Amino acid sequence: MKPGLRIDRFQVDGFGHFSGYSGAPGPGLTLLYGPNEAGKSTLLAFLRGVLFGFEKRGQPERYEPEGALFGGELSLDTAAGPLVVRRRVGKRASEGTLTVRTPEGQPLPETLLSQVLADVPRELFFEVFAFRLDELSSFQRLAQQRGVSEALFAAGMQGARRLPEAVERLRKDAEALYAPRGQKPELNRVLKELEDVQQALREAGDRPALYFSTRDRLAGCIAEGQALEVGQREAARALDRLTRLESALGDLAVLARDRAELSALPVLDAFPAGGETRLEDVLQRRKAYRAQQAQLHERLTPIEEARERLAAPWPVRERAEPLRAALATFAG
Image (cartoon, rainbow, N blue to C red; front, top):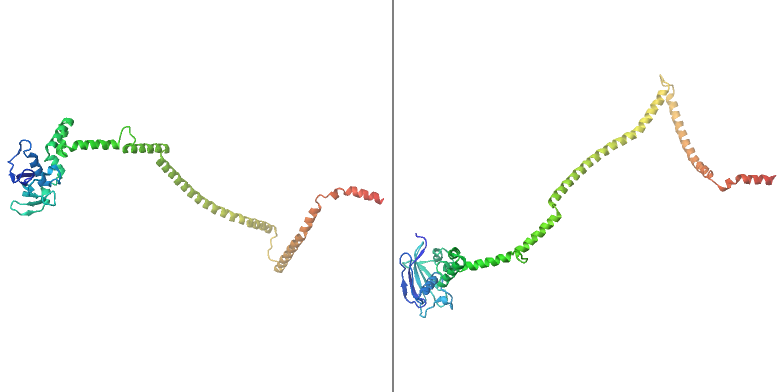
């Protein structure tokens, strides 16, 4: 299977001023030449039309003939084998009805034509592999203005006419994105916003470092608070123990005093006879005495209060002596 595609034969049923015309290019490079209006552009348009569809009605490149037949076929040598591609224009389809078959007449799917054309788009094929004289003139002008290398690049990649248009469009797009002294282009606006943000960041300082340092200080404060809580609980336990010891200290003082009094008493070798009865009697009397003492204290309290009131300064008391002297004089 050979790569590429080659036209072995063409048959023009009706196209432009050609009718029932056929030809077979020779091996290698085939050059068609002739005077103006000989039909060179017409044959090129025919090849284009059979492969990709004829131009719409009303277009100059359509070359619709005056006769009934409109279209023709090409015999192709392709990587998929020999093919016969026929396209005829009817009443409805302006681009023509496509049929693909083997040289023996066996029908093949129409999509096979796109496959042998390597799925090259119509516009790319026209501008790279089948361009007209005016397109060649555009290539020559491009070579004179931009240089031969750019012209060859244009012809090999996107066609002779499209590179200048693409370069101009890219230039306009670049100017719409950025201008050295502009303010409206998108990139200028974004750079201005970036500068404002950077200025705000400089004014705000190192916020991440401030955040982490504050977080570390907060963690230290939390740890210190927890340690203080533990110390507070320990101090509360110690205070409770000391409080209980202090309350017990009074009992210890009474116990020590009682022990001192007990040691001062004479030692008895034996408990006296009837001592339990006598001790009970003493305890009862002691209890009665204390009750009487409490009663006397209650009775003495208002007397003390009255005495304090009487001892307070009184204007009549200050004039007591002159009054007594006056009374004595009156009595004598």
